[in-house]
Amino acid sequence: MPCTENVAHEIIKNAISAATQDPRFEPVTDDELDALEYSVDVLSPPEKVSDICELDPKKYGVIVVHGSRKGLLLPDLDGVDSVEEQLRIAKMKAWINPDEKVEIFRFMVSRYR
Image (cartoon, rainbow, N blue to C red; front, top):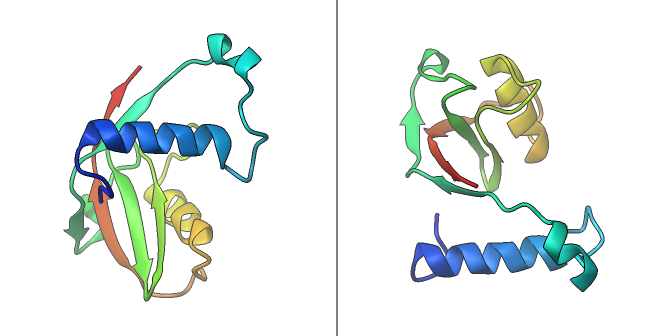
C-alpha cells in the first residue's frame, strides 16, 4: 500500500531508495545515471484469494501473509511458471516455512518503461 500522498511521490521515494539503499547492490554513481533504464510497476489494490485456482503467475502478482511476515512477488517473472513456484518464492522472501499456512492476496501490475 502507498506510504506517501500520491503515486508520483511514491515513485520518487522508491527510486531514490532503490538507487542508494538496496543492500543487495552498491549505490548507483553519477557516472552510471545515463546508462540506466527505468521501469515503474504500479500495483493494483490487493484482492484476497480463497483458492489458489484464482492465481496465474503470468497475470497476477502475489502477497503471502503469516502473522507479521509478508512476502510479495511480481507477476510474469522469468522462470516462475507455476502458482506453486510463485507461492514458494513469495514465502521464502518473507521467511515463511513452506508448510506454514498463509493468507494469499493477488494483484495486477501496470508496467511503464
